Image (cartoon, rainbow, N blue to C red; front, side, top):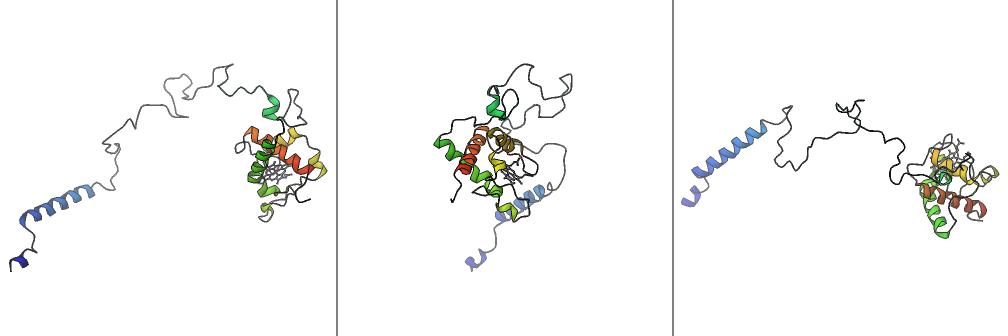
Length: 198
Ligand code: HEC
């Protein structure tokens, strides 16, 4: 009989149950409410600090702009681009350079082929004939790299095409580093002199 009675909760456990119910109710009451104040943040850990954010308004600087221009005549470390031909594909006179800005090595060619397969193949095809995947998707076909027209382009011009895009071809300057662009140019030249599959 005693055992049977044990299934009824004791007084203490009823209190505990009631307390936790009340607790849940209080917290539930806070849900969905909006507040101008930041949420309770028990361990701030320097999470919020006074700082300027990019593009934000500034009361301190006279032109109200938080972002500052570099001091005139200075160059940030690593940004000195003395070698115009390497960075633009053009010499100081503004003419496209005729040969690659880098020495052609097997390592450079290997890198160029790898990058070409990643960035150019979808449109220009692995063998450079311009019959990449995009044609099936309705894009206008790119030119065949084996055409005399492309063969007669200077290396500097092709570097410029990758960097700036041309007509319907987008620019790849943000995806492909300057060095890798030259590596791709070297690979393209190699394809033209020894076409794949021939
Ligand atoms: C999204 C597709 C696409 C990708 C990716 C692409 N191209 Fe092109 N490319 C084109 C198209 C389309 C044209 C033809 C543009 C035109 O004449 O309107 C073209 C043209 C060219 C030309 C000829 C430019 C001229 O003046 O006739 C060269 C060279 C070239 N691409 C090189 C490359 C190289 C190298 C890569 C890889 C870094 C690459 N393209 C990546 C679509 C692409």
